Image (cartoon, rainbow, N blue to C red; front, side, top):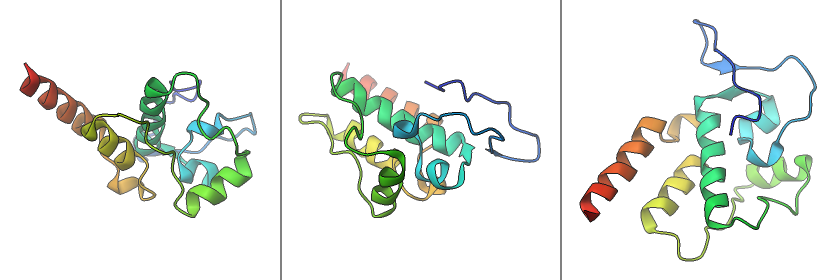
Length: 124
């Protein structure tokens, strides 16, 4: 789900800033990616949260009612996708954490994997 944005980051940076004005998949982009065109592991976590949402709402398009400018405004105001009905609590909490406005407060992929794996092991 990297939409062709996969890049090796420079050794001295944890952020990628695209130099072209190519179209971007704005519905999956983190707030900082929409507003500042900054991409990082934390913005990938945001996109993963959108992917999780899509797995529970496969016939829906995330934020389909918003264009890119309106979406950036709504996200800045705190709007997030409503959690799918019946989603397990742990997965809903992970989704909400993925969409934290502050990139440093989003979970890492390692933490997400650990939480899901631990829960799965508890169920066996």
